[in-house]
Image (cartoon, rainbow, N blue to C red):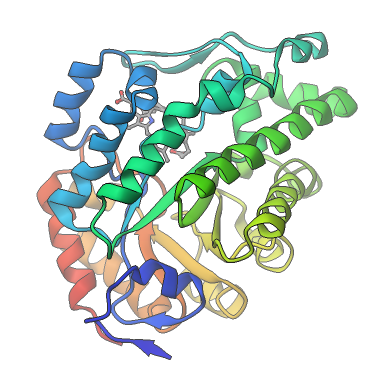
Length: 350
Ligand code: CP3
């Protein structure tokens, strides 16, 4: 069934139900962020990044900025995947220009210092932001909540920062899998609770970001990424079967097919490297697809952006589809190029 343009009322929800929408809904990963001058001004007022995430009034404002400027079909809560380790009691901070920093967990005994009990209270401002957003957003715009998937969050908890090779985290997983499983199990529980709290506060869709799924061989990816993700999806579906779940196993390659068959997700967010015809043939019959424009084409703009976006629309737009990027937008992206991209997507017809 084709949903026509004039019913763009929460069109993201229609696509995630498996309907073909022409033109498709559009939102962009990291649509609130440093490429927007109004975000940089807000960030300057907040001081540090974690305070921005944990001060509802500011997080709501950051969420709304790209909606006001561009009128995306969905707003994604402004927060970060690392609020979960913060909520569990790990020390998390963001260094200017250096990205996230955490007091690294290097031994199983340190897991005893983490606690689920205080998390709901520590993250109460996040849920308050969701409640305010549901009240403040234009009613046609859907609200997305999110969390990091257990492996990606664990990698930051163990490495203490973004890593090039994940040597410490992988050595732990290979060398002491029962200990590593304890951390993953804790994160399955924490992440499920965090997403359920967002749904109860008003999130209409949730997305799980597994940004570093692509560093594992098959068996480990199934154990440390697909299985914990599937456990979370089952938990969410048991509590809120009607709330769609989008999973982003970045770099999973041909194992995207295992996610389509086994994860229980309603939609898969494709990274930039996933071939379009393969995705249509192997995945789109089972799940809605989201993606996967290379964010760097937005920096370039012009024909490079236009041709890539057109190829994606032509390959995936005739099935259940949400236009998005293959990873987060970068700080160098000119906002005018984002405006041109939205116009192109809204002008597309099958
Ligand atoms: O999409 C959105 O607009 C919602 C907000 C959002 C942020 N982070 C805000 C943010 C979301 C969904 C995230 C997810 C996130 N955070 C992921 C998964 C997606 C991905 O990009 O792979 C990861 C791995 C993180 C951890 C994280 N947070 C890193 C590695 C960094 C530093 C990198 C960078 O861009 O500076 C952050 C900081 C961060 N999170 C910023 C924003 C807007 C920039 C902070 C700033 O203002 O200085």
